[in-house]
Length: 537
Image (cartoon, rainbow, N blue to C red; front, side):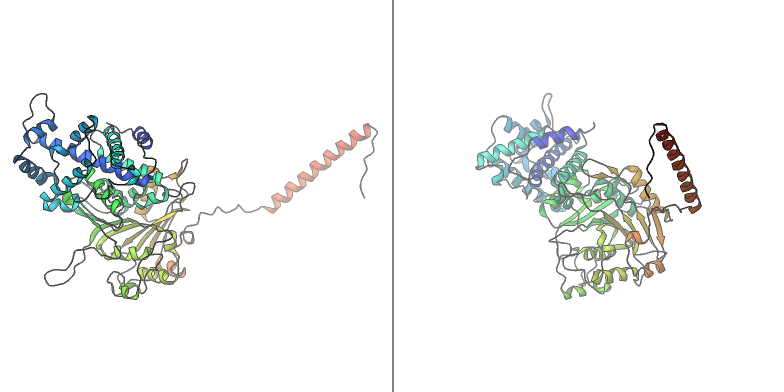
């Protein structure tokens, strides 16, 4: 079935708790959608695998409640957890919760019990613990914005649960989850960009980092150091050959914000990715490197990945610890300087490059400033291009303005996608100026499939395209003092046609002749009327 996202979003918007921000409300709606999904998947497991004896006229939930009782309950939960990675007791299933709401039987402590029991049962499968433990930990059931007392808060939670219960999505829960994340991001404005990258931009990066790969029996690994809701890494599933095959891709990511980290875990699981192929960390990427740790001999072997994608956009107030001791960090030590304290873009670039496989590709959404800012950033950029293993900057792609999320009433600034490779046959850099190709919307601009195809074709061909793409040799980059600002390499200026002076003079003579004829006609008319034209001296 198709999802009527406009209808669902209208219902979601109408049901918003007035005292909550969009981002706060999002946490509750998406958490309960995820809980509903888990409960429904568990029902499917119980029915398809004949775990229960379901009598005629009984629902799966009724059969489950009848059989999984007393000492037998632990056996059922263990069996479910061993397969699904989590387990929900009969008293906590979605169907049971809805029945209690409809019967006015919910008490204030029920929601707390629901999530506590889920966390306890998530311990039953050690391999899955990290992807299910405390996944509802940021759902604040005591938030005063839900109501002034426990009964009022329970009423608000019941209202959200009933809203989610009305969503129609069939077997497309993951698609609905992604569409809701996008709508919440758009409503949140600039803060939406902290947890969601527009699908078209994620798709471009996914196509780029998989441009030259073939299907393999081994898992393809992708990493996002600021993974947000996980939508960017998830986009690779449609681009990796055989990407929807179970185990074809392993998804790695780090996310600093707890709510967003939980959102990423939910998003991947809801989209059918097995818990065994999800490896996410709730951590500050620049402070805590990928935690593979030391081997038996005490040697740290940093993990590397086949592809890295990221959306690195920073505004005022963003900073990192760039004390001199960081120059000893193996991620940063080879580039002469550290990224400035308040513009850590290059810190994320170098961190990510450190974890890129020798034959891998990295694509990052970055502010234009990384192309031309001087001082420490200029030094790092020059050293990336002059690196002992060869120039690691493979391509620079300029995107249109106002396609990212921004504050309401304001346009988002244009960004670039910068592509990096460690192992290259040449040292040139491809520049693509796609800033003028977009579909104008009411509040923001959009990239169509044709726009995306044009970018990917130009990236793949690596040839000059007038007013669109230019392949710059290393000596041209050096003449520009390692400044990579796109207009230095791709000119979109339309030259004025040359002026034909003889043609201009001929036109002037013709105009003078017309004026003389007109004046003679006027004089004749005046003379016929007996009026003498006065000629000024």
